Length: 367
Ligand code: ACO
Image: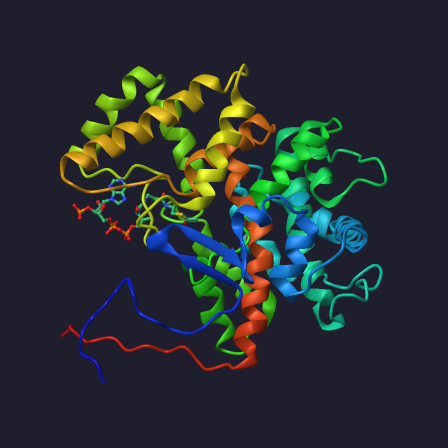
């Protein structure tokens, strides 16, 4: 029995997974053996099927699954009434964490038969997270739920509701790409929290509730919102160097920079940066994007002075893309959850193939 204490569990192996592989020292990420660069060009539905069920879909099947997810991504009248009663000041992550365990997961139509039927209610639960975020956005931002035309796809539905207009194919593709990049990431804090809950034989919805709580923190999913807030506070690229130097001197963390696993560039940030540049160019977000680039450069210069490296993580440039897609920053982390929920679902089922109660020890240092 070890007596060494490792609070952050850095480098501790706590299980195996075949869902995603984070190769931090070489800056590589793959889901089910496919590189994130290849996956980022596939449809969202195809990647969902791969992550959740390890099933590769053809184009027709991916379309069918997308339509099914879009259709299941609706709230019941009772669920809608619950949301309407809540205080509008609540953060979308608090709303998700409260509602995720109680939504009705009965499917309106059977899951397409190219996926295992036992995943049906799990996928309804996952699709409903998008409905909760969409409706909560509409209630808090517009005061009423946006009526959607029939036939919209899963991602299209969200973008339509957020903007009250039909999104371009280019915008839908960009949104799907961002969602694909966030879908799974091995034993990150949120996923591990979900596995801990699953280890007590709790149901999937409870496990997802645990994951949502972990994801909400600024050291994890909440860093997306915090990075944009930081860039807004700095205001202009020419102020970034002084701001970063002073922040680091005062031991302030630069949100969206650094990663426990990636010692080289986070490949997700490598995909997001050019996307963010392209989407923000010529828009009201160009200055914010240039400020982010200047913060990254200043951070790297400061770390370089001490012979250290630091790189942007997934959260750093994602907000710029989301903003350009018409998504307000308080919804960033909740939309992250709408994608990561498919990864959490996959981990729940994987964990339950060989379950064991997770129960570490503490060294008592009290009276
Ligand atoms: N800003 C300033 N300094 C940093 C940062 C940062 N973002 N990241 C790391 N460092 C410094 C630490 O202060 C520490 O310095 P020291 O050795 O002089 O004490 C050193 O780099 C190592 O950092 P740790 O925090 O010990 O490394 P850890 O592996 O715990 O950090 C973490 C990972 C928590 C992500 C960290 O980089 C961080 O806080 N980043 C900002 C928050 C963030 O962006 N989170 C999102 C992560 S991605 C995701 O969750 C989807």
